[in-house]
Image 1 (tube, rainbow, N blue to C red):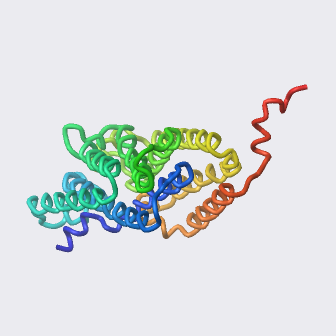
Image 2 (image 1 turned 120 degrees about the horizontal axis):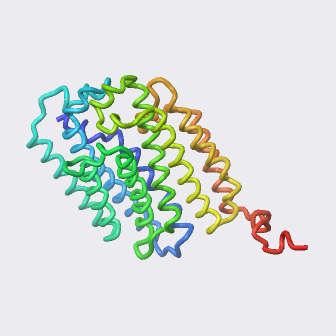
Image 3 (image 1 turned 45 degrees about the horizontal axis):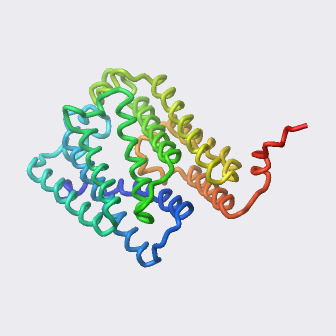
Length: 309
């Protein structure tokens, strides 16, 4: 059963840490009435549910991509490509992941369950014909990065089930995910190093170039920082002082994509980028400080009489 467990990609569950900002934002913006024990229970169940729903999407992704992954330098060694796996068992695994994901979601609340079902549906949209958006240039990035926004919602609904997050942070988080996906493709395209072979592995690569991928990632980064900036200015002006560090984080990640065999291709391996983790820790500390320390100057900038004579 080892190969069937492997295609569920439990090593990718670390990506579900993207639900944490949703939890933090919900605590900051809502008058939550959740107890500590209730929060712990919801968080554990919610995280497990998200892992199983994500694994369901990974299972069909691996099965349906087998005919294309054989053209990838490293993915050709995936179990579905290199070993004789049974379709019936793969579908059984897919169904078990869905049942477990839905079951744990019901222990959180109904809004959380709805978002998990949307996350599951997006896996079908992304991987299954006739839609299979992963084959469509630019739409592949936009559709896959929706999952980033959905994870923010999942974190939010662990804390609150009566409100939704501000649209500015939802859109900003979505575009931040698009930046990550476009940068991942950029690193992958560079690693393959052969446009023809790249097109056999991923159909959208027939239309992409390094320049197009780099420019698109820059566009997504600008959109993400704009909407995140709108959120920060609207809900706590002090956060604007941390924006240069956020800009730097996007630049830092893009620089990683230029490395040989870049970790940007496999975000679950980013823990190996020690300098990135240190930078991220500094950013988190600064944002926490700006959350609890009132600095009068940003509010002064909003004074309508600032430039009056």
